[in-house]
Image (cartoon, rainbow over all chains, first blue to last red; front, side, top):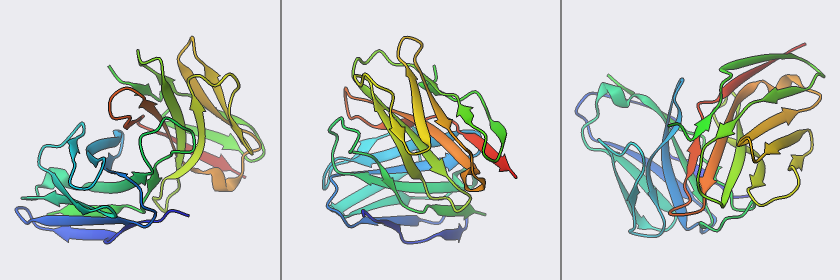
Length: 116
Length: 115
């Protein structure tokens, strides 16, 4: 089974700190995604990457950046954390963008970030 | 306009009964896919079922079936014979096959199954 591992399950940071959320997948998937999940808002796409060193903005990229230097690793960076970035962050990966029922997103367990 | 609408913030069902979770979608793309995910209290997102826009038959996976009504743009999830372990948050999502084929999620429905 594909495994998507998010390095930190819970983080507490202070306003203004630089925060790194790491995500690693072990099945050679091309596509990787970062979502944030907030009560009543569902999942919203922050950034995604279709291949190494490629990145695209999602629906809510402001205040975030990403890095994908290796195929298996996709990092989400909060350059200067703010309290409104307190949220659950979910990383996901999939094989590619082929329209197919077999090509589903596999998610990590999530990283719950609190910014004080 | 929202691309995925889940109008039920919460649903209650008794064990062993069937329940339908509603999902409507909005797209002009002729090719798309519809997904349902389950998120238990542990937080991990679990894929349940998929329906492609060109699929003629409704998708089924064990106790899960997807009631796909293309003309009405609805993709309701039906869970038969509910179990206590079905208590979770359920998300409907759509992939539009033009562009980058990213997934757009609804706001979710919390399902509680009582004994």
